[in-house]
Amino acid sequence: METLGHLGFDLDAYLGRIGWEGERRADAATLRGVHLAHARGIPFENLDALRRTAPSLDPADLMAKLVRSPRGGYCYEHNTLLSLALEELGFRVTRLTARVVVGADSIESRPRTHMALLVEIPGDPQPYLADVGFGAIGALLEPVPLRTDTEFLDAGRLHRLVRVPHRGPLELWVLQAHQDDRWADQYAFTLEPFEKPDFDVINWHIGTNPRSPFTQRIYVQSVTAERHLLLHGSLLTETRADGTVKKRELTDEAEARRLLEEEFGISAPQGARLLPG
Image 1 (tube, rainbow, N blue to C red):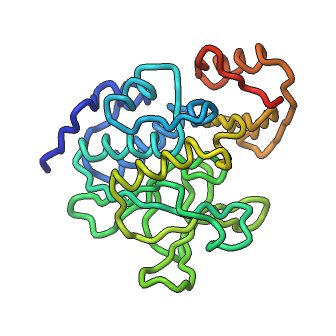
Image 2 (image 1 turned 90 degrees about the vertical axis):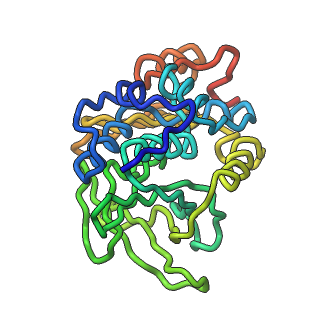
């Protein structure tokens, strides 16, 4: 399949950043491998939004920040970067928007502010939901087939997709994660394609609106095979693969900056205030 050749995107540098040394084919194994390597290789962070700045989604800027610098990004950056890589590898990618429903009273109470991907493999009628930008412990680690009534074990996490009734003309899908012995809704989406101008607007809103959760306090996440590490505000939560959870409050800016570098692999911009207060 002919690739798109996105100006400013460097596939070799990207795959080096995430540590992927496997095949470069548009097949299910490569899709799963690249997805997992990305999820574990680049941290989630909102340091730009903390300064009320919407990060650029242009390929060259994503390469400079997420690939060539000790930084990470949030959902639009991560999933835009992954979509560029997958298209270069020969996959067909449709960019989707979703309503994050973790902790929501209802699906309709949240706007569509999350980005996810629908990925099609040449010659395979089964599309996949891919998403390396959901900053939560219920996030996908590997893509899952877009079908219901099936539980998917993706790198140790258990997920499923369900369809729920709603007023719109398109089917409404909900990603659920198995947590604390129950199925918990993560986000809801339809398969309507969204384009770059749509995400430019949503990204600007989330990155600059003073009411956005990402402009109010730090949110940084790192995932390895052994643990999920999250710094939200001043609370550091470590969840081990065996389910053990440890929490502690950070009180010192210097400690927070050092922790970002040593545990998350992030070099915070000079002058950025990391802790509340």
